[in-house]
Image: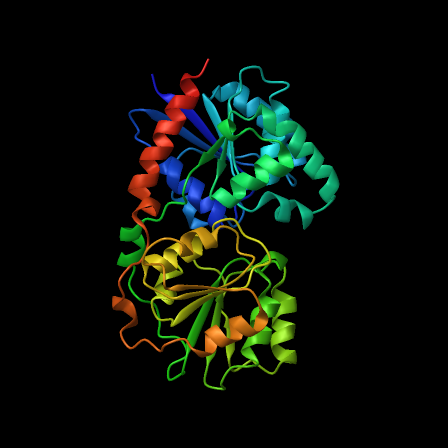
Length: 361
């Protein structure tokens, strides 16, 4: 008999965390698992990542909290062996539902450092207390780094036995097989790229300010969309950087642009284990990241990780940008992604964890 697995997504916007989970559940063997994906929002303007999948249900809720009854009804109808989530507010919702759905097995995954993520959201003290009270009801808590494990143990009183370290998966074949996209900023000196939603967490304002210290021939391409777009465009105009910085909107396959860049920039205020960095490693693309980017320090400690530079200060970040080497053959760089992040390796670990969790009494 197949194990029924339900992945709950807050909306139809596919960011790094959602892409990780969709890739993992989509790769489960069909003869062992029956996978359903439920999206709490509507299917309006859905990402192609979702449109290409079977068994996707939309609950048409405007907010996560408003979906509690429709989600409970869906779960009662489907009767899954395990429910998965990778968004803190959905995690809280599912753990709360365990009071009203006896026998519901819930695996929550945290995409960001929980303390930093909650501290920068609405009602941080309230949500931190609620999360702390509910996490004991999770069957497993997936973390993406040792640093994240420590936060759960120290700030949320989670037992180490409840934590499960699962690396973010990268499909190297898919990433490296995408043809290089258009040659952006033809004739530029250094070509920087940034990939991610245009939200406060990513601190694009830092990146834009850093560009004021660069040569006039240096360029930055930002791939993404989000609520901060107007403010970012305004700042670019104020800094007179319209000729050096371009916003080109979101892309389901940003790797085609990354192949033509000299370095990936990540100036986030908080992260978990950013998947875009792993994808850059897969492409052999150097990475310059702020010192607040979650578990990246654990990546730097691995062999052959010299392509990542973590900068604790503004001056270090600018200095790293100025010393980026201009790559002549950008599309032919060797991967420096550790094997434990390859999707085949991660999928095997994920599958075993699901089977062990569903077999628990």
